[in-house]
Image (cartoon, rainbow, N blue to C red; front, side):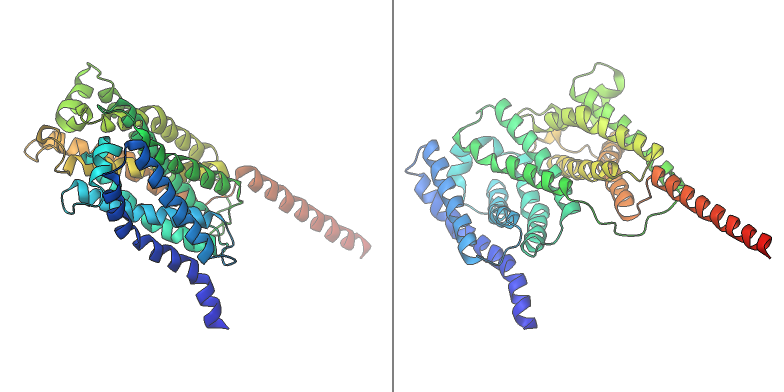
Length: 392
């Protein structure tokens, strides 16, 4: 019986992995058929393949899945392996799997940003898909990892779709294939936010920011200044510091071929991440035990980690023009400015999210309520003891 239960728990995840490996021959066959199809036909064939893969998952795991979100994660495992092939194809390591799709379907992906994001989806996100497929198939909670992943992939989609619209080729029929990558993460985020979180540890009882919280608030303010600098540099500010940062520390912000992906990420950093840093810092100082603050910290951590990882990846990638790659260590100030800014933007939110998730504090009004209860109880005890003394 124990062996049977273990097989039932692992079967959906194993099915997702095995079917995911079928993406290798499917991609090769898809490329052969694409030679005979126009772009709209490539879109239709890709949609039919994904629908068929979904049907296979439904048939093979019927009655063994407790949360229907599993099917979305299983399909994303399949596409995550395809993204590894996409990155390898762009780097010239393999050939013939997605050649025609990248040439005619989504040509704007053939860039350093496209390759780095493809590798990210095939490694970091693929790991998340496997974990969430296992947890969802067994009816277990994946709230924290779900919020972290959904914000990260939505950041990726914002950059991709805006980049496609601003690219030299423009969006095509196959751009529509990215719609599930927007809708499904949104559905996961809504489901996770609607779920009541279970505390991982007993919360502290002071309801006030500790010395660690104050240190993190300081780092968040530093991150806000870094976001402002990067945003002003992206917007083409004529002031000395933003101009120096744009030309010397992070020249990738000026790259426009095949699409201004890095510049779009800089604008997202300015208009979305900067307010996020400030709101989280304010929340920590006012009342660090609030649930919305923990959720916002995790969401901010997911998006900024993807943004920072992709930024570092593209400045090191060979598809990036030499003049836009990471500044040499000969220019120490520019070199360390790049790393300092991007570490503040991406790593600090991870530390804040870990602190608020793993070391929660109790909401302040709850602490005050408990103190009032204890005071009432102590007063009642005193009254009872005084009555006994009088009776004696």
